Length: 299
Image (cartoon, rainbow, N blue to C red):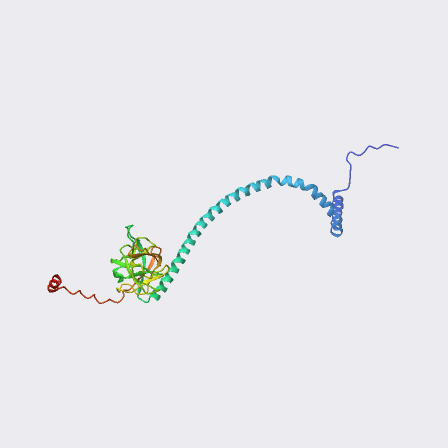
C-alpha cells in the first residue's frame, strides 16, 4: 500500500457552498425559534453571563454622565433657589399690600356707613401729619379752606368722635383729638341722660369726667354720647365708655375715667362733619348800676 503525503493546502467547500449552508442553518434556527421558542433559555443564560461585562463596559460613560448631571443639577438648583427666594419676597410684599388694601377698604366702607348713620353732611379726609409737640394730641388732615373746611367741625371715624377742627389752612387743617388736655366735649350718659363735660388727659386711651358729684349715677360700662349742647357736635355721637368710677367721701367730686370709643390714634382716614345750625348768641349780662351798688353798701 503506497503512502501519499497530505496536500499542502486543504481544500474544503467553496465560499458559495458555505454561504448557502450557513444561510439555511440561520433560517432553520429563526424558524425553530419563532415556532418553538427553543432559544429563549439560551438567550437568558447568555444575557446573565454578559451582563457584568456590559456593566463594566458602560461604567465610564455612566460615571461621566452622572457627574455632569450632578454639576448641572446643582447649578440649576441654586438658580431655582435664588429665583424662588426672589418670588417669595415679591409675593410676601404683594400679600402685605393686599392685606393693607383690604383693611383700608373695610375702613372706607365703615366710614361710608358712618356718614349715612350720622345723617349730616360729611367729607372724607386723610391724616398726613401728626403733631410735633409730644405733649399735645393733634393731627393734620389733607382738607383745608379750599375744601370749605371750617374751624369747629367735628371729626369722626366709623366708631365715634375723634376730635374737632381747631385751625384751618388753605390746603390743610389741624384737628385736636378728644384726648388732648385742652379739649372738652359736652356729653350725656345714654343710660340715665345725665349731662357732663368730658375732657382729655393727654393719654391716648384715657378721658375724664371732671367736677362730677360723688352721688352722680355713673357706672362702669356706661356709654357717653355728645349731648348737642353748644351746637358744635351733632347729638348722639359715641364718644367714650366709663371704665372706672372712684368715690371718696373725703373729696367733693368723684374720679371717673373713660375710654374713647373711636380709633383716636389708629386710623388714617376720617370724616369731617358739617357744622350744625348756628345758635343765637348768648344774652348779654345786665350791667350793674351805681344805685344798686349804693344800696348794697347801705345794707
